[in-house]
Image 1 (cartoon, rainbow, N blue to C red):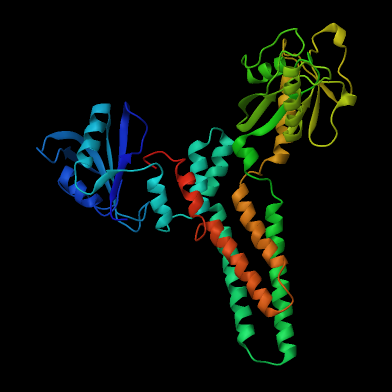
Image 2 (image 1 turned 60 degrees about the horizontal axis):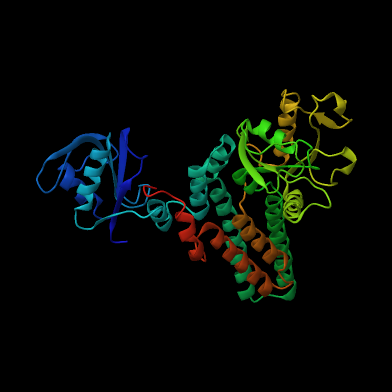
Length: 426
């Protein structure tokens, strides 16, 4: 990479302070042009920034210098912390853009350079992308753990063991010994490979990252006029679904993202389930039935005996404020969207079910791509043959899967999509 990039890394002005980053071989030369000198590495220095063409003062800013390869991107980096007014920011960006060899960064380009220069691996980049998009406390903690190398350290341990097993397999193949010695080598290597595959399998059994990232899908379902939309509005504390006394009012799926005590939840309202609906309502019923199959947690507002079997089902006795409804049946939670009765208990029950789905506090959660690569390595080791040659090939395939997992190889097709999730200054 011969060009030098720059961008505003903080939020849009106006703000108290704006941070502008530059990275690349011309970063230091550009600093000398607009600041007159380079500060001492890693020591914030207050310097007047000037327009290179006429020397006019733009602003007085804190300037920080980071020498590559020990910088965030692995390249020479300069950060300018100036006042956050729009005119100041525009003037600094214009001054940098007027210097030969400088250009505005593309989305995620700073992070992509960090990945290309070995400062982070692909799992850390994925964690950083999730951290930037985190909206709840649970999402933030999980993304930060990944961004700070929680999975990378485990990957390195596993990969080192694969490399050691591969080296031993190749040495045993090349060694000319008696048949008993060869069989002993085969047995030991096969046993250790199976033990490693068993570790992979245990990690694959852990709760995944998707429910944490997308929200635990909590679906309200039941017959028409059961109080589903009123319950969704009460839990969301806003009028998100239309509520009337007319059966079949809800004809489409309504999704409401929420956070209960920092836990992400995707609350879903559905059409009432019944036979004999008109053509349009029948489409809504079909979509409602599809949502039942996709639910992580199902809030069932129909008769308890009609509740779907299997999965995580919470039976809700809705409209409990109405005298004709009577007491809640055993095993059901009495709830009233009008009075608020039972909403606290229902929320606690939803959170309890969510805890069984979401990763434990401080545990690394695999996303779909990461799990697929680890499973590929597991399958390769499980399918290793009885002789040293097939064992060596199985170990090679497992190492290849780990190279894709960490981004060492075979991931070019997904890099643009990943780094496109970042802002210009990241």
